Length: 148
Image 1 (cartoon, rainbow, N blue to C red):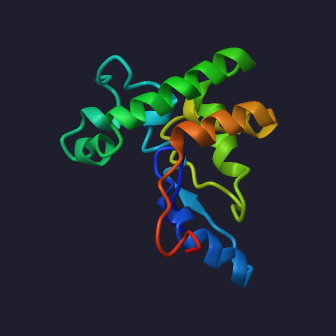
Image 2: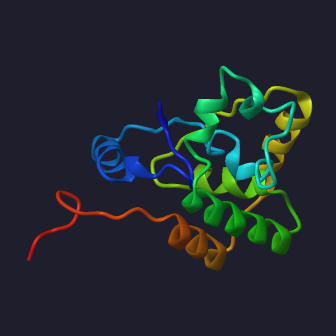
C-alpha cells in the first residue's frame, strides 16, 4: 500500500518496477491526490472539506501546488469531454495503471462513495490517458533510465 495518483507518481521510479518484477499487486492510497484531483480546491477551500480542518490541512496542502493545478485542469477538461466527474477520471486513471489491483478510496459520505463507484464504469480513451500521463509525468533519472 503506497500513495499513488496523478499528483503523486513517484512510485513509478522503483516501487512499480519492483512490484511488477516480483508479481506483487499495488494498493494505492490517496488515488485522488488527497482530494485535490476532484477539483474541489480549485477556487479555495470548501468549509466542509478535509483541507479546512486544522488537523488535515497540511495533508491536503501537500498537493496544492502549481503542478497539481495543471493536473487538476487536465482532469477537469477530460471529465467535461467525457461527461463525467473529475473524481471518476482520476480514479479510473490510477485503477488502470500497471500493477494496481484496487485503489483505496477514503470516501467520507455516500455521495463520495457513489462518485468513486461511478469510476468503475469509465474507460479512459488512449488519447486522454496519454494527455494525463504527459501533464502529470515525473522526471526519471538514475537509476531508472539506462545510461548510454
